[in-house]
Image 1: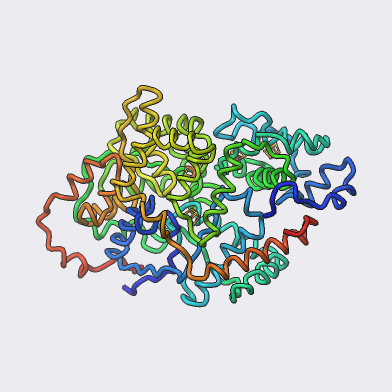
Image 2: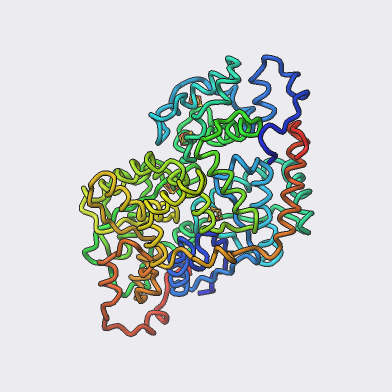
Length: 317
Length: 211
Ligand code: SF4
Ligand code: SF4
Ligand code: SF4
Ligand code: SF4
């Protein structure tokens, strides 16, 4: 199988010792196993996310995204830009759509980019890591390297908003996207398909400015996971992960609840199932320890690890 | 974007009482407002629904009714979490999220947005933080947020949330050294020039005063 190559747009929160640095660690581990090469866009910049609107203005936002596009076109020609952060992905996709649709906006964007010595040709494709997994690797491809099926782990798939709306993942519905559940199943764990807070908004960036209102959302999201007997919540979005994990102690303090539900990324589940150490799966980066996953990660399985890379892959690889 | 109040008043005069026309020309995606058919679907979509004094549906109605001051001084748009619930449901495909952000940003530009609105201040802090070096400095952002209401309130807030901050440090997800030197883009200067240009173009296009 030819190595798959992408222009990586990691996003600020994934940087070394950032709030989602363990996301990055697990993505790297996962990609190594899947023979996917992610090359960070040289000197990529932050997109500003949805929340910066009061300070940003329309064109500035597009220009920030277009700078990343221009850099990837120049340095990593032909490669799709892949984001791991839902907000980065959404912002970049929105810009791409707008620029594709308006030659005037494109001209204005390039007028601004020129100040940084750059030009955007309009060729960039923007994708989320989850799309790469589903569309380019496929569920079968994701299943092949599994050496430690996550047997007996009950997982609530929390998709949240921005990976789901307004673009979403092709072939999935906005009300009940199934890809996280399918992925959980692929890894040998048990998806809680009736989990009804799957696409509830956690408050997003307003968790900081409107903490009480957001924590009400988060409380629902976590309590419903408990109701369905979840051991852990899994999410594709770094902000969802941070919000839903770190505010549980605040909610407990305010409401006298005893929430203690671990929240992990899909890439961590995959890394563990692929035999990674707790550290390589980013499991050391949690305030609420994902105990069940840690137990599996430290377990030694009698498997010849070299063998799995030599195993024949699916036809489409 | 310029400081609040910094505005070309002469350019505003020509709208007279036609607030809809003003929104169409000056607010991001404002040209969509007239497409709203008042079906009410979006009104039940917002996660912070009970805290919106006027739902998006109502805001669109108020714009058409020329209720300029009421709309621009409203706290409601600032309740938007960018969840896109409304957008995927709206039968007329209005980019409601962007219009909410656009109205909020426009109100801020005019100096009419509620001064103490926490999301307004958070939004400005975020943009400032991320454009300074091209990348978000999470520690300064967090501290800036705590100390938004002044030094005493800041320490109180940091103390209340100390377990979170401490936990993040222990989990190696908050870097104390970001205070001195955080992540940044190499071409900071280029980014600043590019953003200055973008602000100029936008001001020219929408008839705003020079940034
Ligand atoms: S969405 Fe967040 S993490 Fe991603 S680039 Fe923008 S600000 Fe940074
Ligand atoms: S669930 Fe929360 S963090 Fe995740 S995308 Fe939605 S608003 Fe953002
Ligand atoms: S995106 Fe904003 S306006 Fe739309 S439903 Fe969510 S909170 Fe409401
Ligand atoms: S859903 Fe769309 S058409 Fe219906 S009231 Fe809201 S904006 Fe108007």
